Structure formats: C-alpha cells, structure tokens
Image (cartoon, rainbow, N blue to C red):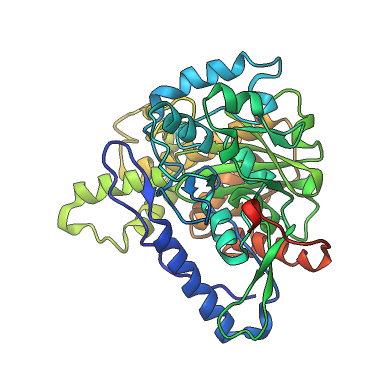
Length: 432
C-alpha cells in the first residue's frame, strides 16, 4: 500500500470567527494527487472512495458548482445559536438528542445551515448542501450523495429511520430539499477516468473520517475488543458497539453515537484539546526561551523534560481545556497543586500530557463498553513514546499503535475495495 500527500493551501482569511476553505483549491489538490497516483501505478487503482472532515458544509448549485466556501468544523459564527437550537430540538420528541446521535455544536453542518437560514445567508443559486468529501466524489462520478456517517455528523440524521430528521430540519428553518440523497458507504456512485488509466474506475460512496480511521485502525482485530484513541490537533476515543446507532437508548453528552459499517455504531468522545493543547504549551515555552528555543527541536525537548518527571507530576494537575470543549465552549484550562518543586518545564509538559489522557479516559468510562486493547492512531500518539506510555497506564490497557500512518485514507480504500461486489446503476440528483 502506498500513500501520497499533497499540501492543502485552501484556507481563506478568517475574520469574525470564520473558518472557511476554498473548494476549488481542494479539488485541484485532489486532482493532482489522483493523477500522480494513477500515472505512477495505473494497475493499482481499481476503485475510489472519499473521506474527509465530517461536520463541515458547503453549498453547490444544480450543476454541482460551488456557490459557497467550505465552512469547516472550526467555524464559530453560530456559537450564540447553539443553545437556542438545541433547546428547540429537545422539545421535538421523547428521545431528544439521542435520536440524532449528537447535540448541535458550532461548526456542525446542521447548526451552520440553521445559522445561514436565520441570517438569510444561504447563497443564491443554492441547490445542495454537502460535505467536502461528498462533493469531491460527485465531481469524479457525477452523482451527489452522502452516506449515513456523514449525514449523522451534521446533527440532522434520524438514526432509527436512517433518514434525515425532517422535524429537526424544519424546526431549524433549513430547506429540506437542500439536503443530499442518502446512500450506504460503499454503494456505487458512478465512474471516473483518472490520469493515464485507459479505462474508467468505479467511485464508491465514502464515509466520515472518524469512521474511516477506526475501520483502518482495527483492521485485523476483533472490533469488540478495541477502543481507538486518535490524537491529532483534537483528540477522540471511538468504541465499537454491535448496537446500531438507532438502537442506542441512553448515552450522556459529550459522547455521541455515530453510524459505523456493517450495521454497527461508534460511541465517540471528542475533545478539542489534543495535540493543539501541547502546541499551546510549546508556544509558551518558545516565547519564554526567546532566541534559545529551537523551533525544530522544542517538541523533542519537551518530551525529554517530561520523561524525567515521575507519574503524577509531584502533585501538579493540568486540565488542558485551553480551547473549551463542545457544548462547553466557555470552558478554560487550569493548573492546580502548584508547588516550588513542581513548577518546572518538565512538570508542565507531563501534566499537559496526563491531562489529555485523563480527558480521553473519562470519555471511555462514560461509554460503558469495556475493551481489551487500546489502539492508538494519529501523529501525536505515533511520534510520542512517553504519551503512549501515559495513555496505556491511564486506561489500564495495552496500547497497540495502528500500522497505518494515514488511517482515514486507508479506511476509505477499504470501502472502495468493496465496490466490485455492488450491483445496480449509478444515479444522481437532477439526472446527474
């Protein structure tokens, strides 16, 4: 298996809480990657499936041309609408948020669309709302659709009915006709001609990046034995459940229930403070060190300092909620137990790492599905041996690092591999 990476330079200026990207730049990067892969290994490309950030949303016209930027999961313009929107949806039925699998948070597609509807900001010419990975698949295949995992990430999906939650959509003022058709992940969408390939290859409906990453990370392991912890900029734990998402009857926020493959579900606890929290400390130490802080070596130095400190940090405790948390955006981080002995760079570094691990373990306990193996993925796990030790000790489980370095891409590839087993024609909205 090979991996090809192309830089993403799609970010747009972000005033006033915006977090947007240019879809055209993302499409250009995808085309470059696919052309290179197809030209270098034409005999190794048999099918395509896409994955990408789930919660973000963009709007396209009838011809599938973008009429808006991609609004990513980091967008904060709908912050003030979140409480009102969640209260309105909680009144709809007895299951409340559990029927949709998650509450609405800033950056989630459902809340972004509700904010656009309230502000009369839905672009002219709008026909469909979609995730970035759904749009890429549509550009390749001519068919726009979204799978259940991506649909659920917006907070507008009725898992029990495997359909859009029409009551929630109406209550938020979102035009129902803007929401894309729903498909199973792996279902055939159409065909695409790639680079030097002489024939077209099938394009399958993809899945959310969380689900794709878990699918790759647990490959070869019994799903019922595994808890996957992924730490990049953010951090999350994902626990596989044999109960379908629509069959889960009780779960406490901030956990979410997300559709997974083969009728299973994921119980997911996501933190905004993963590798980004450690980066905040790095920035502080760099500023304190001035010209003596080497940018390339500082993370390695931080790990070395932290390794010299005993577990428990001599009483120093850090809650690294520096960026708040979903549902508690006003939350702040804290340090406690400070003494002359433990106010050192090494103690601070280890306290942040231990705090990150405690947050994830709290999610794991809340999921109530004990596992035998902790599977680690993401660069913050793969590149930090001390953090791996802290995670294993905190969870009380042996930690196995995923053998894949690009789990989300591998998970999408595993879905694409199934497309040859599918039957039926590819059809799309509006005759595409």
